[in-house]
Length: 90
Image (cartoon, rainbow, N blue to C red; front, side, top):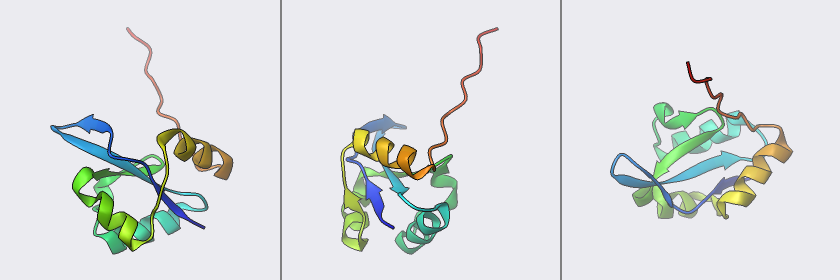
């Protein structure tokens, strides 16, 4: 029952982003994100997108820093991984 965060290395919308995940439940993840003040719209399939300036705050609140590969492995092992569905080109 741990919340993990990867480094803010993902570019988007002129910012760098981290991913915040749980290794046990979406409910745990949503509670943590709410305590952090992350908006629910930041939730995407199986993680929250968190801007770089919120990284230190998430760690101070208890998120465990890890690399992106381990974060994905943790999601898969927990059964919480929801892959993006790619649409076929028309």
